[in-house]
Length: 161
Ligand code: FES
Ligand code: FES
Image 1 (cartoon, rainbow, N blue to C red):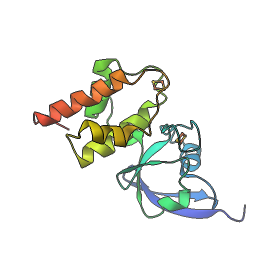
Image 2 (image 1 turned 90 degrees about the horizontal axis):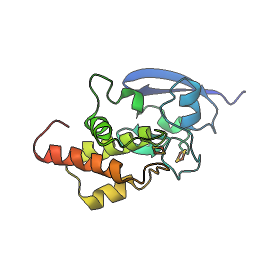
Image 3 (image 1 turned 60 degrees about the vertical axis):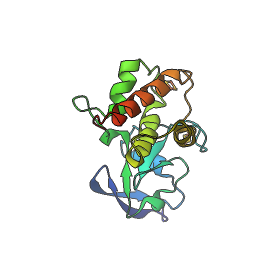
């Protein structure tokens, strides 16, 4: 369509250029380009499954227009840890057996990463404020919270972030 435009941004540290129409959301563009870590859940800023980092801040990619990412840095779960070097929250989620279907987990990890990058030892109030936009339909949250508290306890003892 004629309203297609080029959008350039850093995606997981790499300069990328995408075609997108003016009203296309970032989530749509990412998934069309094969970046499938951000999930399409509610599509209306309620569940957090689509969470990505925009210049380090957790945002809902389902409501962010793709052009709003132009010239900025987008981080998805694909760039957060890997099998050999997981993010500490990924390690703790596994240790706690906190993952069931996994659909919410990329968004949870990115929200937690944004929080921990800003403050390695957030308070319970900080956690509540920061994580309440990420819903999980499976786990009841206890194990996810336990995993996050485990990371924070390790950070407080001076462990790796
Ligand atoms: S898919 Fe974006 S918040 Fe639910
Ligand atoms: S583990 Fe299934 S939605 Fe969270």
